[in-house]
Length: 216
Ligand code: GRF
Image 1 (cartoon, rainbow, N blue to C red):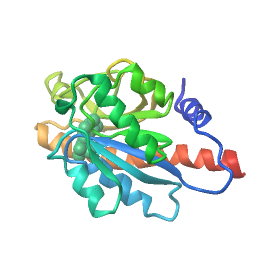
Image 2 (cartoon, helix red, strand yellow):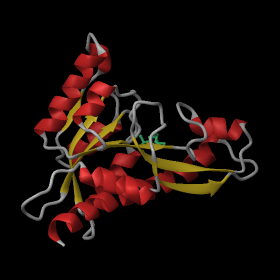
Image 3 (cartoon, rainbow, N blue to C red):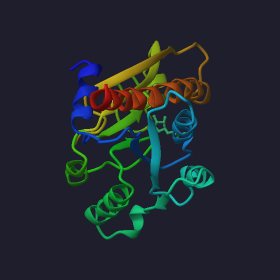
Image 4 (cartoon, protein in one colour):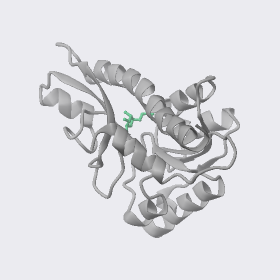
């Protein structure tokens, strides 16, 4: 399915609205949260049709929480280690996201695999960012793996989340060359730059299509 069709599928699962309003996005992140920051920065632009209304991290050290806090965005620590089961952990995620009225869930460096139980609460409304040209190099350490494989190019992917690990239908990708002498740090920086452009752009494409559907 080409990206445009996946976006249409996502939009079809976002409830119609009666008044002009930006779509409400919830972001799940584990680490530095630079992609959350890119979404926050984009959300301040005039052309932006989404707002970040909820941020959750499973990691007490995550900068995603401090970034959200600094912006006055509701944010929550849901540390998976404090829950007896995956189900309880995910139930807490769902509670916060639902309370904040989240319509689209964005996994921006969220290092937990979500089960069907979670995904069923947000059917076709969860997207993920991954630092490789999927289907190449799913899972952890994707950038390192591309270097070890001696690939000529790398990049990033935004895809719809299904029950597999980075297997859902691809919405959009950005690519870059792997340059001779590249190390993990240099290639990571190049890919991050692409990610910071790609992720807000995809979320805004979804948001704009919702606005067009409801208010064209
Ligand atoms: C990104 O490379 C993303 O593709 C991957 O985790 C990283 C998160 O980076 N899933 P940051 O926390 O947004 O800086």
